Image 1 (spheres, rainbow, N blue to C red):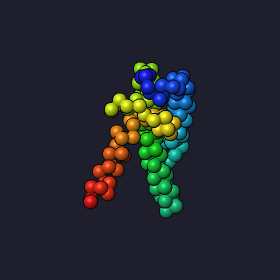
Image 2 (cartoon, rainbow, N blue to C red):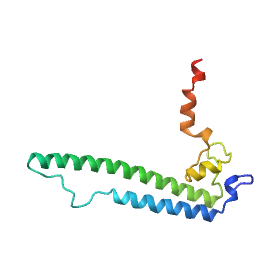
Image 3 (cartoon, one colour):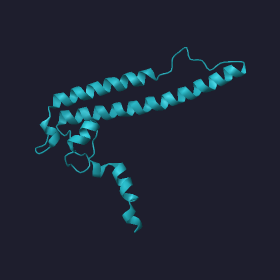
Length: 131
């Protein structure tokens, strides 16, 4: 970790342990959203059709959530590599330290607040642009 980096004050092992806990939780959540073999969309009467539609809708929602969890898992893998490389806690865009508070809230953050896409979109719609 770079000199002057506030995240460098923490032990890399503690960060890895925290990321491992998050990774396990996300993996469990993703697994719980996988369709089960017993889930059936077949039915002949109206109630069965309604039930099948609800089940199909739930499967679609679960799949979207599972994909989101898998993206988070990939983010955690990237952060784990950054810890190993010694670049954890530095913005991957500008190289400035990511504040401790941001890393505590989002341990997989790779961008500082000014470089984050949300920050850029908020700046584009700020009231000063309309004055």
